[in-house]
Image 1 (cartoon, rainbow, N blue to C red):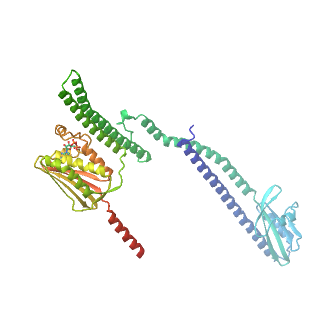
Image 2: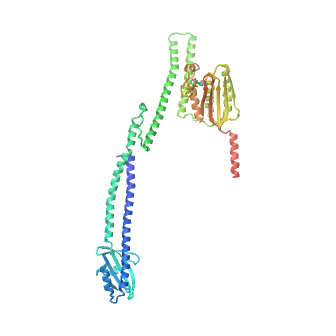
Image 3: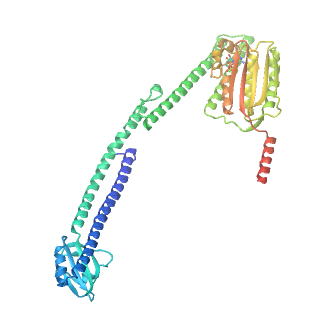
Length: 478
Ligand code: ADP
């Protein structure tokens, strides 16, 4: 037996709580019964003594009144098993119902107000005293009524409870053990099924029983986790397959180029051409590997977003200035506008620079000569918004939702020519995500594209200082 199992602990807890409740309940029951029966007996006793007094006062009126005789008569009329002792005001015994009664014991052992338990000839009594004032003087009567039936009833009830409680506890432990086993059986089944699920059969799911309880919720949560895992694993597998596929081409070109020049002696020009080819492909490969590394790190959050304050207006001005010669050499007019001189965001400047370079690079790549590319930065609804708008070829409707996916190219032949692997926008999306922002595209085939980046706006240092000062002033006034 596993002593650390929930089943075992549940049984122990259940048994301990039930046993304690049973013991407390039985004790209370026994005490309540005893109290009730003794209260009844006390009332009887007090009624008897009251009746005895009334009887003597009534009989006293008779001319032939003989006190001893009257008491004896009264004593024989008592139905219950009893003991009776009557003394006069000096303490001399006038009557005792049994010669064995030791009056000293009897008188000394109880007080007149509270009935007192008494043992006489192996019998149990409840006794009380009362003072009567008759014409011929004061009398002290001590009456004890048998409490043996009450004692027997309470003893029997107590024994029954004493014997039954352990029996109930044993039944409770056994029942608890089997109940917890039954209750936890679905958990064992879930665990058993879950053990059989691995990477090879990740599409398998646990059977959800419609019981609307915690187990149904556990199974659904588990299945949800499997859904997410399957999706992640599929993405990783696809990513690995795509990465290997993309790497295969430059590696093959490098190998083939080297093999072909090595096959026979070549001229300097031929060697130089082959080495140029190898160099170009190596550069492509390095770029691809860098991109893959960036994305892999972004997946495990290894590119923590630093918290530099960056002026987005300045940043896009710098990126636009860097890009203008390339755009112009392609016959494209590149313009930028940032109405707010200070548009601060928190983040990593080199990553944000990379983001806008990617967007501008694409805009220039996919816009024909004579077109325009515009870069805007503004503040909108408490966010810093940057827009890259071009008059290029646009993106078909069905492709817009996929352009941020890894290795996705709308038209691979078109992208290949420009040297793209379909990772640029995936990296852009990862950077935006790291900066807690969002990126969207609006495009029309042939009508150009607009990429919109939204980042959380951060008040500039001067604004923050002013804010702090006004807070301070408010606090001081309060
Ligand atoms: P690539 O490096 O191949 O350009 P990206 O991830 O940057 O990969 O872009 C994915 C795809 O989105 C590209 O293949 C291209 O077809 C499309 N695309 C991206 N930007 C634009 C744009 N400004 N205009 C038209 N198509 C674009």
